[in-house]
Structures are given as C-alpha cells and as structure tokens.
Image (cartoon, rainbow, N blue to C red):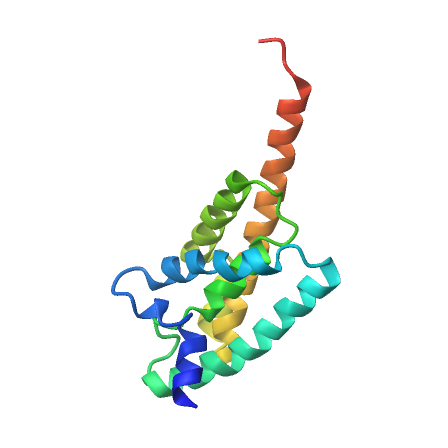
Length: 159
C-alpha cells in the first residue's frame, strides 16, 4: 500500500527528481490531462474532484511516510493545479504553455490566499488547496490573456 501511496503522491516518482520537483510535477500533468481534456465539463470537473480526494489522502499519507510537512517529492497537488489551470483551455499549444507558466508563477509566488492555505492549513487538505487556488489564479489569467490576444488578432489592425 505504501508503494501505491507514494506512486500517486509523487506523480509516478517524478517528484523524486533532484531539482524543481514541483515544475516536473506540473509538466508531467500534461500526460493525463491530454487524456481528459476532451471530457464534457461536468465529467471533467468530476475527474478533478476525484483527483482532489485521492490526492488529499495520498499527500497526507506521503507526508507521514516521508516524515516531512508538504515534502518536495509530493507533486499530486501540482498535477491537480495544472488540471484546474487548463480547465476549458483553448485548444492550442501556446495556450497550454501559457497555462503552465501562469501556474508556476502563482504556485511559486503564492499570492494571497494561496499563501494562507500554504501556511495555515496543514496535512493533505493544505497540500492540495494551495495548488487549487494557484490553479484558479492561473486559469483566470490564461483566459483573460487569451481573450485579449484573440481580440487583438481579430481586430486586424491596419499596420
């Protein structure tokens, strides 16, 4: 059971890479996301809820196994954060890359309330929630930027 918990919590051991495990976890999220991105919105959101629940238990248990609070190798939260970020993402690789960049910015900088969840809520729920909130910030940023870019391109300015 311990092996299953650690496989889930570390994104199939991607979190064990020596440098920037959160970035690697965010990148590896694209693989399962490509499988679920075509789901209907209700089914996509249900999938996110299931990942949240599984991640909550796996991350909390992995914390105990590793004997460290919110240990670096735990990346299931980054995977879910990327899924949140890419909700209804435009079907374009540039949009996906922007989502990744926005998510990493918000996950690393931890603006309020991301920082509040990170500092005040502990265990599996805290591990998951700060990345969900960072993902919401990244989701909003991605869609706003894409809307602005799209309107500029569609305006077909004369120069």
